[in-house]
Image (cartoon, rainbow, N blue to C red; front, side, top):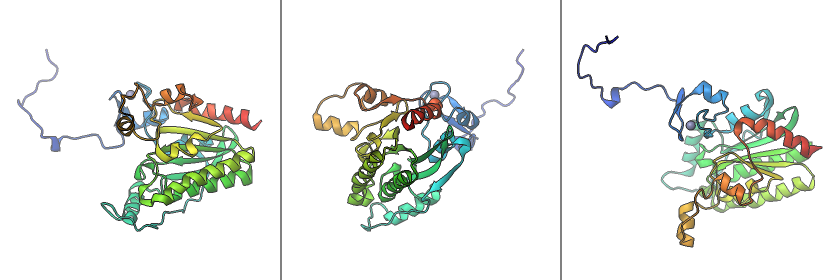
Length: 281
Ligand SMILES: [Zn+2]
């Protein structure tokens, strides 16, 4: 005997009337498509516990995962971008900035914080992809430069978490200059014998890969991250050859000598703490 009997036949609900779980409570894993509850995501450091896929997260989440007790002082929180070129595409750059700020609650595509990890002091600068594709403009470059100055002045190691589509086109040459600026600052950090760890996450591309992201004393990536300079389509069209399987994944890049380690996010804090211990002593 059936436990339930459908009394009304042919119930059809139109798509608009279907009730969905509110956004943010449940998420579908982009890899294995299984539903992930928000509390499970937090518990697993935003890694799918079915397939190990590393969900894309921002500075808020990385800080909460890495800093001891999520305690840190945000550095240079008020830097915002100018519009030196009076740039306009589908909308004015100034309008795009304003809109993105109110949508994301961020001032630009990076936040920096000073705190400790496993009891050791550390400055982390972390990029936010949902702010204009994590694009590197003058604010990103300036915050990294100032964070490095802070590290040199206070003798604190520096961790950079990259997540970027590359240079910010709306700032053209001003954006490209950040590559040279951050690289020069990192050279000063190295002269001061202060450790620099670069963590590349999904995706790290363009001018970011071509500057600070690849200049770490140790370069680490999260598994499965897309890491490259130009996109695969552009490369394929340029060299007129098919690209090898897995091209531009962290695993491929590691095999070809550009990375030192791939570290699962769930072990990241522990591994970073032990790297720092080794490097500082
Ligand atoms: Zn999954």
